[in-house]
Image (cartoon, rainbow, N blue to C red; front, side, top):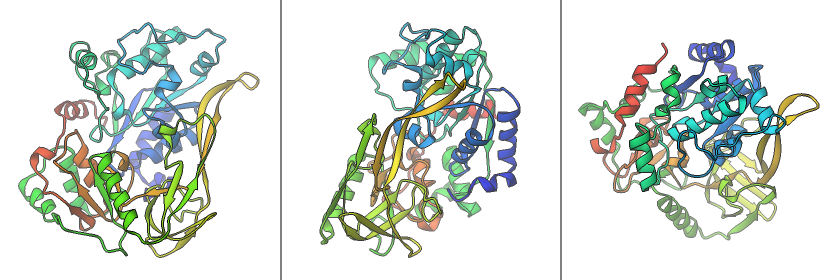
Length: 437
């Protein structure tokens, strides 16, 4: 992110959201296009609001990045489609630690809500109602949702059970079609100041991709960046965004194999409970001098942030040196990612997050290419967008293009077609109905 919490006081959008979150007990959705600071606001709210917050997210990696738990872990939900009022949703006794957490939290903060299905939202609602004994939406608790519904949608298995659930029981799989919102109006506060891009013309193009309102002039301007044979020079740090995981892995493996330098592997360390599926980088990280990497953590002094690209310049069994885009070199130190669960401290009568597992590794991974899905939230100076046979998901093209800081830094492997700009009309209608001006 190109700005910090110190910039927030100058942003009226932040102030509006801050006032609603801190001075009311309203449930609210904090939304905004890519690069408007949703994650920064979330962190600042949890840290500075004075409210006791519990943070949950759809995936393990998102939860670790947000400093919280997964929705399924916190609520003890089954890993399957969930019917409203499902009997497997747990009711805890009044002396159970989970009940005490639910009772004592002021706010439930839900990150990346666009990736949660409607049935999961209703399961959260039902859990809070039955455990707190209050038959109001979310048991009367304030819930603050963060996310951009115009970005990536929930992952669906498309099996018969899901098809039935999201046609016969729910209007759609999107979180806003949860039944709890028939009872509760959810206002949207949209953050509008874009920090990732500075060029108003490019921001306008991205807006029209986001809402599927791109006109022919805009399409011509974007497709002027069609350069199928473009190859970045070795000096440039350019990343390819792909639709499929196998495409990104293939590029990374091929580029690593082309380097003639000797490979060096670095083993990570897992203490306690840390699911290997949630590892931010490889447990055994194999690198070579010349390898392009992306940083996965923010440096304490700001030398690099999550998403900064670099090139490996020196490898020793115990050391990795990386040159950044500005030419500065940094000697890497191993970082620690923590797996946390919320617990209730009976002695001090407060909620605390306990670390149940740690993963220690150098904070980088190979990054000649990554998937569009994994690029969400990151920012790059130069990107090659490889859509393969075309976009296939709502918001996919918008996420891919909006990772880049400028139109000049964008290179398209395929021309953009109108059918690649997939925006679900239900998302557009929800945003239009619920925007809190």
